[in-house]
Length: 343
Image (cartoon, rainbow, N blue to C red; front, side, top):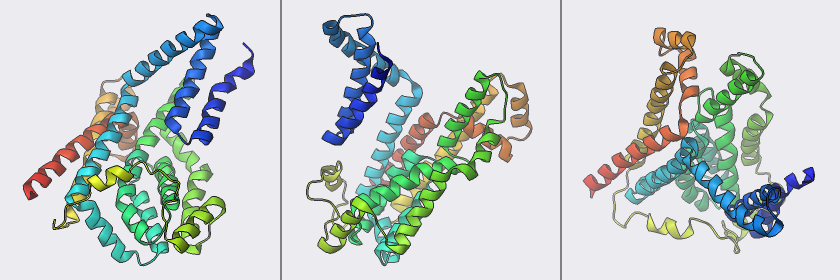
């Protein structure tokens, strides 16, 4: 098979994504194209369609069987469910109204969104799921386009998680650094290696600065300029041809009229999520290290379990996706108890 054909699956996925605006369908067809090419080497052109489908199903099952992948899916569902309960209790609306009093303009609303994104530094998935629903009504009130809100959230979530000294992404990255050096026969301090790269993470640093500059200077470019003009001049935060994924669901989780709004209905559940997450990271990483074979690291952890060096190693060894699912589940139970108690 010609080597250039290996570029076909990602090319198909990218072209379809631009044409259909459907990411899931595009990725599905892209992977199917890849399994078809793999089948060509051992089956004929016609039979390859059949074996490509079987290969795709096998890969999907194997992917879902991986605890990390399953944990990511479950944590997104659980955190989304938590936010839905918080919203139904009126907690998200109370937070939004409280922030709206401080957000006197589009500029301050964007900066508050940025600050919230910086605050939820421990995980990029949790960042988007928490900040988005809270800031959406505030940004709508200030006539900030949904495109700009999405950009601020997306351009804050991953970059801050990528340079925070302690986060789930950093833990995963440290494991990749360690494995990469192990493959070439070198034993290095993976965390120290990560920290030394922070000043050179130009995208992470510059995009966080760029968000502040665009908010303060009120300067936009290209399609974002058109979106912001539409929102400011016409009052349309969503384009006429847009199809928001949450437009129908959002109305179902609005609090009923007459419910007493309290910011604690958001602070306690989300605060519990953050607290349980940090405790879970520690427990997961601690048990993984103690049950491992690195005797020197085990001694360090036992002698100084709460030192910064121990905590960074422990967080790096934790199974972040599973921990966040467990934390979101516990936080959801607390939110449900609060909702039932308050009727």
